[in-house]
Length: 159
Image 1 (cartoon, rainbow, N blue to C red):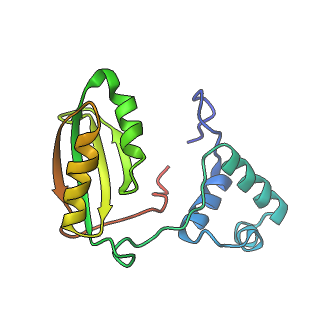
Image 2: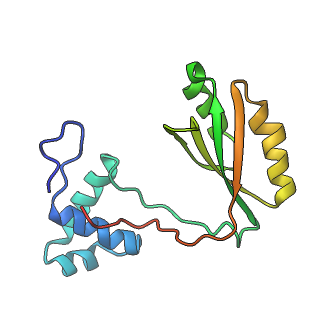
Image 3: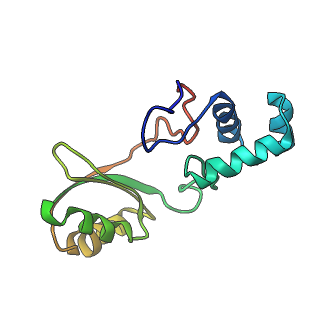
């Protein structure tokens, strides 16, 4: 299914999807290797890659292992906040080093915040000295991670 009829969406075709799939498996795959795999020119891959990056469809990043970097405590925090200042509150919380993911959501909470901390004391300090110090944060419930059962940064490839 192409996104040509949806206003505001990038136009992605089958070749683009294949490029994305290959790069999601290994972001360092050379353009020449991708071109050979897909039976097209290296220049075509380079142009499509640049377009996908410029349109914000694709971003190549290094993914770190928080545990190996000394951050043994991870948690998801549901935050209830003053709705009139929700985006401002989210922007302030997003600036904290411990925050690795933050979304505005519907449901019981207004924000879901994912954090990484060195240990439980670090998490306690984050909650008490940073998160609850943000004006407009009314309530927060913390869900500590016991074990990560699945973590996937690759493209699902089902589109």
